[in-house]
Image 1 (tube, rainbow, N blue to C red):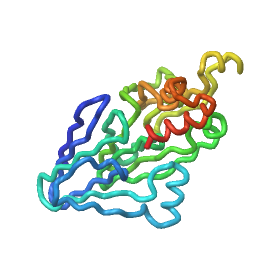
Image 2 (spheres, helix red, strand yellow):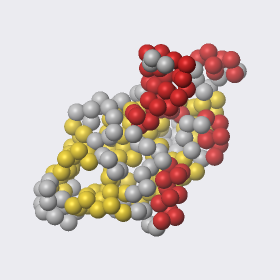
Image 3 (cartoon, rainbow, N blue to C red):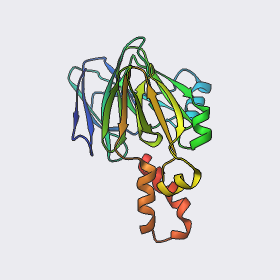
Image 4 (cartoon, rainbow, N blue to C red):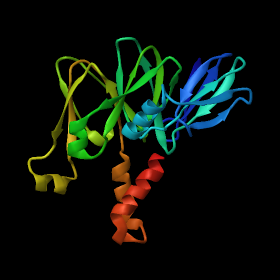
Length: 241
């Protein structure tokens, strides 16, 4: 499979060129255009209960879409559901990645995904309930809100990323969820809540913006300001898809 990422970072589009009988696994709703001979196959991951479990825990789609090429040089164009960036992650056996829910865009057909539960993070931040563990051999593409940055740790340092900005990281990294304030009123004043502190050796991808903060910036311009909490959630769902 050949691929290129077009129009990075604000309006990214993934262009893949598939050989005959080659497949690509995509998140439903991400297909922009494709060769007319290509075939879209809808399926559930594993079996019914697992599909329901995946949908409930990660908010990913109930069905997974495979696009299969029926001839060589079949063009497929994929894009996130808003003005998001796209980044490639190479997955190899024994080198798993953790992807935040909602940021998975596509992968080669060999890639496997499983739910990773993070109770403490859900309980403390209410930002994400679960993440997705990506494994096996192949290529995975993730998206984010605005641009994606990469940071690589070695054993000699720690690195902190705000919870709302994490896109993906290697599972070999150790991390702890901690507060970023010296008191409750400091958190309210600064608008900063929980962060992840990473250690070990591996890569982290994080986004330059987060959807929730962007929604809050738009809220003062809404006509019905009394329903601010509802409007925040409405805009968040529109942008996230």
